[in-house]
Every structure is written in C-alpha cells, then in structure tokens.
Length: 185
Image 1: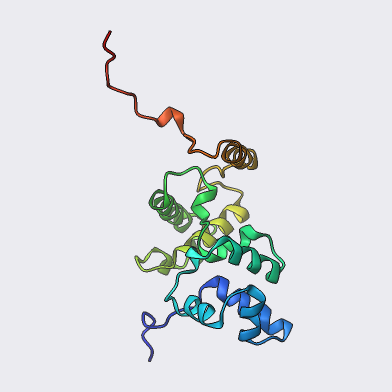
Image 2 (image 1 turned 60 degrees about the vertical axis):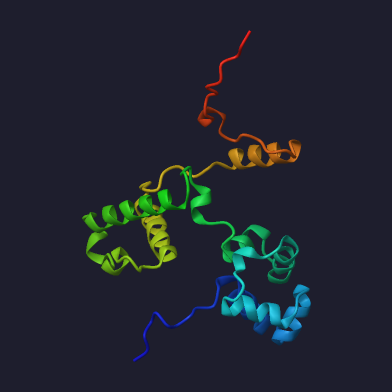
C-alpha cells in the first residue's frame, strides 16, 4: 500500500498544459518550445523544484495563448491568484478560517449534512477541495457562507489606480495608522 503523503501531485497548471499538448498531438519538447521555455524548466515546474506560483509574466502569457484561456485562469492554476483574492478578507489565513466555519455549517445542514464528507474537517484536508465544496453548497443552497466577493467594479478601480499611479498607492487609507508626531512651531 502506498503512503498518500509520499505521492507528489502534478501542479494544476502543468497538468493542464500536458493534457492540452496531448490533445494537440505534440510531445513535451515541442510543448516547451511552444511556451518559449526549455524542457528542463517544465520538468522543474512539474517536479516542484520550481514553484508554478513564481512563473514570470511572459510564461503566463504564453501558457494562456497555448491553452486558449484568459491569463487569469493561468494565474489561478499556477497559484499566483487564490480563491481568497476574490473575497473581502484580510489574507489567506482569514479565508481558511471562513472556509472551516462554512464547512461546519454545511455539516449541520438538515438537507446536505447527511452527505457531508467528514474527511474535509481533517487538518490535512486539501484546501482547494474544501473551497470547492463550500462554493458548490453556496450555489446549490443559494446561501452565502464566505461573504461578499470583491466586485468587478472594485477590481477595475484598483487596476485603474495602479495604472494611473505607478508609485505605491495606499489601497486602504482608513486603515492607515495615524501619525503620533507633534509639529513644533
């Protein structure tokens, strides 16, 4: 019997690229060439020597073109953009706590609770699967457990601010600490 902790999974972006290459009938060397990288680079991403969340912008663009998907989907599969980025929460840990609380609500639901897979509450449960189950429940039950998603208008305003102000912009001015220095006359 194989210990599941010793099995390494292929990063989602690399799995998608290899599946698309197979559908297109090209080998891994040709895939690397189409993406503008070496076969060795792809092998390092696949094995985890290099992390997909650290891919460069040009490689992300090339992946999007090869896969025929919007760049944001590449960034999500690479781990550069996470589900928590779409919610108004202060960081990944706060989002995980929300997901954990949501799973407990689902477990107690009179209609869906009997079908709840208790493995999702274990400390080593896959966070992506946990999030997926919560999102499915929200859709099926028409209940909101994770809170409001950041609106498209907020995303657009943030992007526009970043474009029009190349220097760092305070995105949360109400949270900025007040200066305690007193001015001398």
